[in-house]
Amino acid sequence: SSIALRSITMIVFCVLLFVDFAETNIIMTEPYFNFRSIQESMNEILFEEYQFHAICRINGGTLSAHKYLHEHPSELCCLVVDSGFSFTHIVPFYKGRAIKSGIRRLNVGGKLLSNHLKEIISYRQLHVMDETYVINQVKEDVCYVSQQFYKDMKVAQLKGEENTILTDYVLPDFSTIRKGYCKERKDMIWSGKYPSGEQVLRLSNERFAVPEIMFHPSDIGIQEMGIPEAIRCAVESLTPEMQPHMYQNIVLTGGSSLFPGYRDRVFADVRSLSPDEFRVSVTLPENPITHAWTAGSMLSRSPSFSSKHLVTRRQYEEQGQDACESKFDV
Image (cartoon, rainbow, N blue to C red; front, side, top):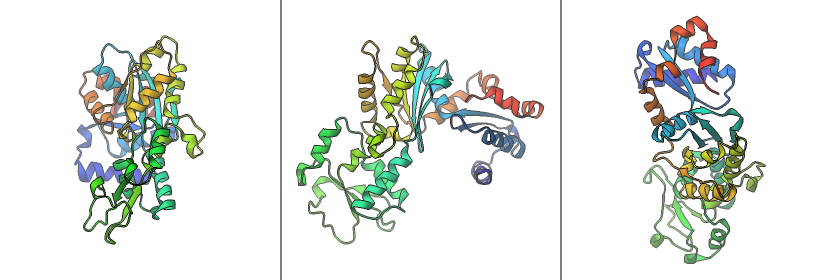
């Protein structure tokens, strides 16, 4: 809601950052195809309430594309796969501009994976439906993307030490244990009976079955494409001349891209779905979570930033919402 947004921005700008609004430009990211009413409310808050000198409203994927194309000046195209909290967006870019007709959205993100892991653990072991923060940490610590799903599933069915996927995760009690952790295999008790002071989750196929949802959402009843099929669908919607350039410039961003094995699985699946004569290259930035932020920082220092991306308060006062609508993308 706009009330919550005002409260959050007030704390960030006034309490944490001590912003001098009249002398400050701001880059604000937003989702693709954001509602116009939300965009207009954001413009009003930033210009009329806080009186920022100038604003840039832009998508996180657009920032990532700017950074990638800046680092690869010989390329004109790239395809950004942004696996975020609520959704995964696949967005093709040409010369830094999103090609709207090629954008694909999957209703699969980090929140869905965490919620599904909560349901599995609650059904099999402990009731953790109210422990979103803890289970999200479990997901980040133990889950990985399988390269051979059915082979891993057979290993996960083995008993005792033969099951190399099995791991025990010690839950935090926020007293003596501040953060959960995985037990070393040498310290695991294979009977599963630990001292009463420890709460331990025993995880096996959950480790790779949960991230597999990103590649096969139909596994849990979501009738949508997986990420590799969505990449192919996005590329095939473009002109034939662009398609080989998109396949060889795929950029992965967002928190879910940090799963071990994610980049290799995307590459393998896209390679199997794409024409043999096309080269496939998949890039995973050093920090996919902050990649858009670092891209925005880089963009703000470029000579053309003010003229190409900013709307000043003076322009807003003269032209109103039209100034922002004509300048900002998607």
